Length: 252
Image 1 (tube, rainbow, N blue to C red):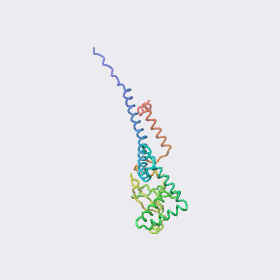
Image 2 (cartoon, one colour):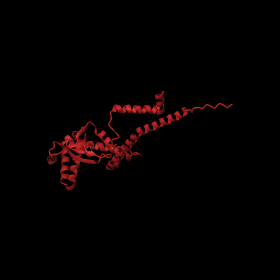
Image 3 (cartoon, rainbow, N blue to C red):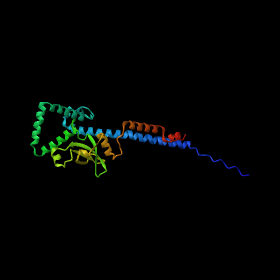
Image 4 (tube, rainbow, N blue to C red):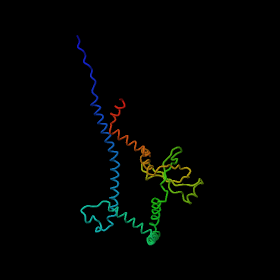
């Protein structure tokens, strides 16, 4: 008589599922750590670089006898930033009164009579007054314009309206406004031109979100804060449970 054939035993998948589950969980933990630590590390590095740069500019201007670093065995980071902040605030307070305005006006008169420096100073002052003015609207509004061809839309930042000389020189098409079209992924470079205000579509988007949109070439989209919190919570749940266990629950 022939011997009975042995039963075919199914492979035990519990250990394999456990290994896959642990591997997937570790992968999710790793990428979650990268997402959390990456922006934090870059922010700390840029902040430290800015503080060190300002310290290198300001500290040599202060006599060493007035610096705590001269009496301590270590250097105090950020001291130059504090000195620069106090000095600029004091300068602004002194300029606000009559004596300070007189001194500033006297200095401006001297600079205005200098052939090359006068034009440079006036241009830089206008730029700083435009960028740091609390009442100005330059680069605080985001818009869309048809560029470079019809049917394609580009993100722009609205600047100041056209001056009387520019407005009169352009074809009559209503009020003209200056727009700055940033280039991706470097928004500090781009094109500046004037357009009729009717051809610019204003977008209810912050300048920060628009800059992120340009720098990421459309990858980072502005989203609702609530949906962002829900997405983060879902990602944490996946990291804690694991993708294999979620499939097992769905199959069950």
